[in-house]
Length: 103
Image 1 (cartoon, rainbow, N blue to C red):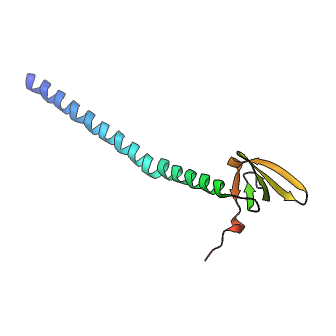
Image 2: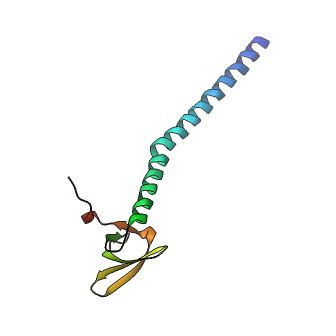
Image 3: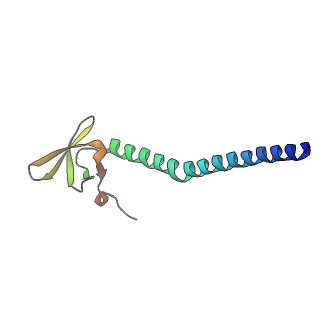
């Protein structure tokens, strides 16, 4: 009877170790396939926003196209038509695809 009890306890510990290993593996997969690439993309986007200067063509997150006329600490002043200027937060502005040249 004690042999069966010891065998049951031993298999319970190995099952718990396997479960723990699987949870760690799932977390690692999520990190390397979802979280890490997203962090890289965010860093790249921040660098491109920091490099934007007066005269660059941009697109807002709402789809408004324009040209940067003034740069502040947290905002851009974008001219969308002759004499029409709109102030955007830097987080909502992306580089225009028309500025990107393809080889």
